[in-house]
Image 1 (cartoon, rainbow, N blue to C red):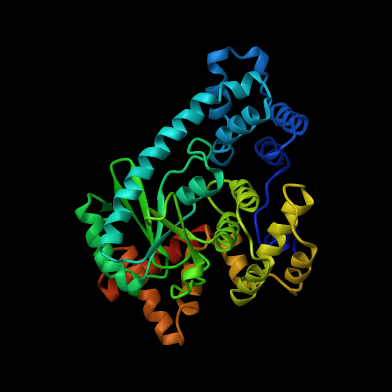
Image 2 (cartoon, helix red, strand yellow):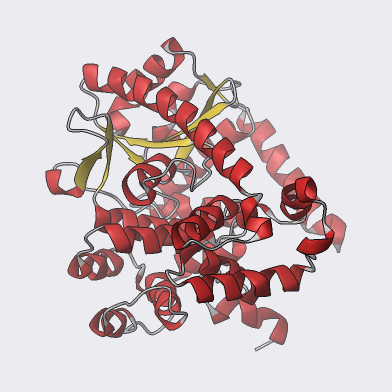
Length: 388
């Protein structure tokens, strides 16, 4: 095999680099010496000479030098060091970022609860994923995990009614050029974004990028956080754990490393049904990415995964094609991914082509078949022919 192609087939997931592991262990270690040692290794790697930086410049100096995935771990470093009783000149300066995160998350939570109350009154089924449920149930600290949006999943049949409620409460589509009320039936993606001031809400009609589904009729898949008045309805611990890993390890503009802290916090405070993990992985062709992620967590000492779970998940001959598409090709070859999803979501090739056509008619704001064909040819020319 061409050496240049090996990284594409070596793994189905994106794993942290060594320096990111040091930062993750500074966030998660429950031992003073280990947390401090790993944090100092991380500082040395980046060349942060903390003693030489004026006290008020430590946070901006470190923050501005990092990519977003590492930036979002700094409040958790502060919280962990404070809990362990570790004093460090740099970490003490992260307190301002921690408090800023707490404040922003409280504002986002208020927007979320206002809208979920409307959904409850309208008897619309929903559940929240990622940020807010993780913070509330597993981190149990609104300052420990920055989050920028609300992720909500609804049934497709409730789409139009939910969008109407969103608009009544001041939310607007991020891309308002099309009719967002008809999207689920004609789109290969899994969510659309709505905004309200500085807040963002991603409204999902499928569980995730990986298009596996949840049986809404099974009440045991859900749980409520905050209080029993249905303030925040989310997935149970096991499905939350699966979603965090599958979503976190795929190729992403932001370095996908926070899935480690999310997964470890779920394991520490939740109740994982490992039989369900295996069945879900098998039914949805996710054994390969889940095995690699859990093996990584186990080998690096972030948590202990039962040996039988790893043995069962390892029984897969190759990385499934969808995992490869999600992690290695998705950002550079969106056309291939959209084409794959079109046929994955339908029963026959003709329906897949129709779905793909409707997807690009929406994406490019084009109702004419002729203009759509011209746009496709122009994209192909720009992407491939003009570069040769």
